[in-house]
Length: 433
Image (cartoon, rainbow, N blue to C red; front, side, top):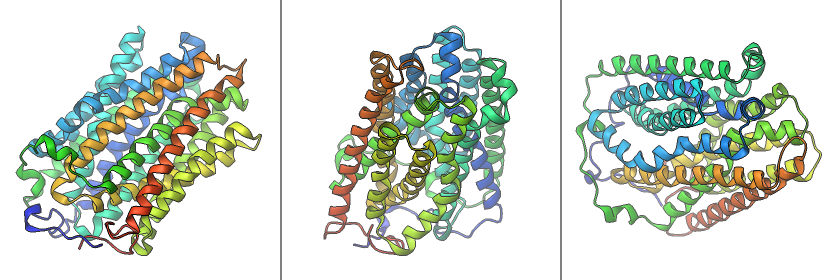
């Protein structure tokens, strides 16, 4: 079923001439999100060092990353309103500045409570800056180019995760010096992201066109938060459940798991983990273009999601080379994000897209937060460690169960989209004219 925007949807933010500065704007936005993704992953890369040098438990480490998602639970809808009220570029600057403060407190790191506060403040930035930069890019690119621009933006963001997961190799002297120098490196990279956001704001002020996002919107009625059809709730389930496996495992526990259960060095474990993001850097735009050309978006989401429990089974049940799991999860991580975000925009009408993204962000953050805490507690209860790697099995079982729930949600989406109540996800081309 093809959907079109009506007059009630407001002005079409993509119906304007392409600016010659749009690629510079994309580069600046990508640098800002690169810095955010780098700092997001820094605790997972240091998990073993923090355990050995600071005496942190698995739960302590899980809580540090869980702290990043509390602000999104509390503030995601507010952040969307502030973007509409003050402009996306200005919000990107404000949140990038908060992120720098959070990264500095994390690098100071002592006592533990100060480190936790730093991660919490960084989470204020991490949740809001992504929405702000995506909204800001939408003002630079016409409709015919926004899909490719968003895919490139996501791919370049993955470079931040890749660089963090390989930092124990290219910044080995810092890791050899202890747990704190790598955190100061992360703070410096976060400051570079703030600089990019400031230039992005300056460039944004050169634009002469007025867009819908700058005009402001009224706060929607509370009841409208729940007035979405079944396809939205199915894709919401995939957003939340997939992220609740991928981010806690890869950001928080994967490097340590590979060290303790697969007996890899820190450098080798970081390389294996980084391969997931390296694959996404190159493959994300390809999968997005393929979906636009050939359709079958919901089916592709099913294929990408089924690779998640397969990855965990390979890690937990076989002695295969860990790179096999990296290839499987890398394909999954390239495929699902490339399709799920544009599919969400096809399911939700334009006038309510901001509300929908806010709802997704809140519930997704809550899921990631809870998953971090539960996985850490389960690993602690099973006494998971280098001396007892079998203790990680219960954590893998937990992540496997959640990934199967994600697969159930996307299969339900696929079945609905094949019927008369679908939104055109299975048809080639762009559903909205």
